[in-house]
Image 1 (cartoon, rainbow, N blue to C red):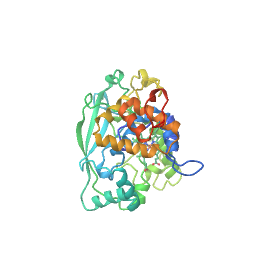
Image 2: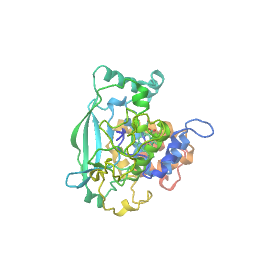
Image 3: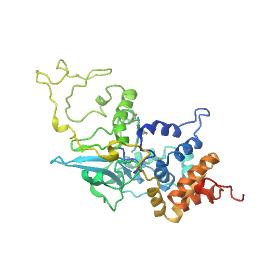
Image 4: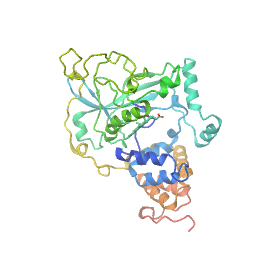
Length: 369
Ligand code: HEM
């Protein structure tokens, strides 16, 4: 569970993850960050509109880690003692209050102290001012997932709180700094597959991909025994038959057999730790990321919820980035903003000096033409 500071993501098809990440890195020719790459990909992937709206809104530039909310983003599941399954989304609400940078103050801070967020968190914990988050979940009974009007496993969508209200379950406190950054942070290997009994996954394809992808990255980054490092290893005695491999430096279960079942009193498979099978239906079963998605309602609702000032800052942030992309890409992206809300598309078009007439049929003209 990462607690990312946004409830949704840019894509809902994990096959597109590598492409998306390339657009956030550097241009292969110039080795520079490229607004053209970013906006080209986003404008051709309208499912990104919700996340793009959040990213360029005030919430996209939090004033350090302590002042932002966190989200599981993905749908997970909880299974009770009667073996009933419920789908859940996790929310971590900051007790410190939301605080964000605006574009100008973020620019200044980037030059003044590029380590601002790290310093702020370390110093606060160091002096005993422990940051806290209220932890809540949204719960959807398994059966409702089949008929709910929004695909509950679509990572580009939220579950409206009116349908699935937040239920408080606890508090998260960060109460200790690492003593050694390399040992406890650089070598940390987080992965969504690390869940305790009673927690499970969901058919969200992005989550499914992450279940495999993170361990793979850890094996490459840290080595095959990454989960035996002190910061990653289970805190209780653990018995399984995954052993050996490079850099295995503990007793490694000595001469005990390394297979199961065996006749020599080795640990036995515990069926209680197996997620129960579930029926799969509809778009959960066969998932075409280009079908069954409404790209525009939720980003439009978010825009309409913003105050006038917040909308102006959103549009200003977008314009300052999109202005560096070619005209054809600007126009394609404006059409998405326009479909979410005419004031959204119109604001960005005006900011870029483009007329909005004809926006829906691709005939944007330069203002004054
Ligand atoms: C198909 C989708 C995704 C794939 C394949 C993917 C894959 C990865 C991989 C391989 C890493 C590096 C892990 C490591 O070496 O420790 C990573 C880092 C990370 N991912 Fe993802 N990811 C995906 C989507 C997401 C989503 C949806 C979120 C948030 C909900 C997320 C949050 C993060 C975070 C916070 C990091 C750590 C970055 C850092 O170390 O600074 N990822 N991802």
